Image 1 (cartoon, helix red, strand yellow):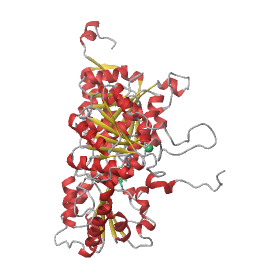
Image 2 (image 1 turned 90 degrees about the horizontal axis):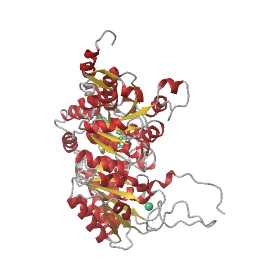
Image 3 (image 1 turned 135 degrees about the vertical axis):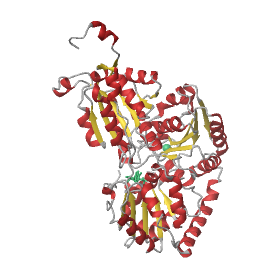
Image 4 (image 1 turned 45 degrees about the vertical axis):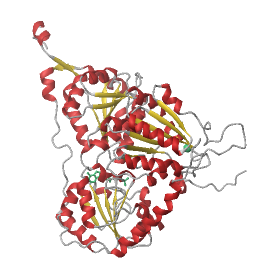
Length: 573
Ligand code: ADP
Ligand code: MG
């Protein structure tokens, strides 16, 4: 500023890195930050709140990050998580990777120490080369060094997160960037409003022709809807395509409710039959990963000559596990629009195929029904979930958050969803610990009531956030399926006084945790207790924790994925 008079400097309006970050986010309609305060970002959180952003402060960065990840899934805008340097950053990385693996847009913004010291490894407070560490774990990673680059830096982060296959982005914000000062008008002019951040990607007409041919040649077709289809938010189009085609479908866990689970074409209760017997499988925003046994093996009726049609925005997803006969690379809305326009004279699948499926669905549903009505005390999973099933049927806008092993497996198949994006769970990794972060963001982003159905072990990873739920007075009801252990509560240790590795304090009083922070805490020992407590919680919108005591003998090792445990050949002593 050499040459300027003192008076000119005094009257010049200034801005700084803090405000430029906030203004850049707001300019792009990002109005919520999931956060844990600390050096060097405490003031950034404060100022964001003062500037009208919603800033939700958590007790641990992993949970704030899981909140941001699911906010991205629900809104198609990057969920933002703001953390301190080194340890806070590392805690946030778990959820950044989780967002990336799940294809959800998220931006992890972490404060960091000064480059000069980090690069010479001179031992700064919480020194760490965060950018280098984040890079392999997310879709893109950037560092901003100058206040004048904040606009571009945030624009790049947003576009990287939401365009193409969505994912997690790391944004490194050194402490001294935040304090940098520049002329306010120049600062404002440096901000970027991202134009068309997630451009449509049209499939080629040739690819559409090929897909139509393959589908027409099928006699036992099947559609698999994945959470990519739910993310795409073209719900009416998905429904129109499925209904016009007449093809039976199953929904991956978070795609449940995209069409109501009670839909006549829904083959969820005949999953084994349709995976085995189908001769053509169309994947819409679903991957042939471990959750679908890689499209291989007995479950898929191998050896088979199934054909595959695959809609995905990422060309690299094609042929990942099975050769794809008709790859449709493009966004789901564009692909389904093009396909739907080609359905004139479409012949729906034979009644022989759809009839066999309906019969199997009806008989499996009938088999399950009496188990769901059992009133056993102590409760088992089916008796407890039978009641929750009714509650969700009566409250279709309530969001179900679900994690655990048996609690997850049973709830996924028992509780029907009738609206899109109402089931939020452990996602692609099957990770435990997402529960409270997910529940909090679901409530914050939608305002709908949330019921988090949690295994007692799963809850433990994020349980401290019940304080956050109470502090922000969120309409979240946490239901803990408390069988006093991991998988079961009955393991014993024959060799020492230590408890077995998989058991917890029996019948722990988790309800008191919620009471400790002013919420409602209730123990439920019977299905009647449980139903009453959850209905009250949804009606009142009060933070509630229902400690549902489940028979410690109920439950199996690793739920339905026990086969993934390696077996030891050494004989037990
Ligand atoms: P699920 O676990 O339900 O099977 P996945 O997360 O494995 O679903 O797969 C979702 C897929 O959807 C990913 O391969 C991702 O690239 C894709 N996807 C996400 N959004 C879109 C979109 N708008 N259009 C097309 N594909 C999408
Ligand atoms: Mg348990």
